[in-house]
Image (cartoon, rainbow, N blue to C red; front, side):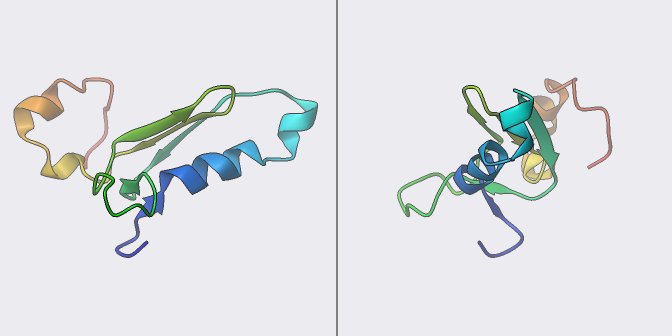
Length: 83
């Protein structure tokens, strides 16, 4: 995608293709600064905050948090780093 966006579908698919998963079953959690888009479908949202896949893992994006209203950002107390 443009503007350093990541396709979340492709990212989770790459996580699933990790060859170490065969020897060591695992769930991966990835935190990215880039914005996430769900896929190439023009009817899909312009960005998402995260994407999970059962038995694979999760990717979480902080790319759009700076555009979120401060009150909503304060609800995300688990994020303890500057944007």
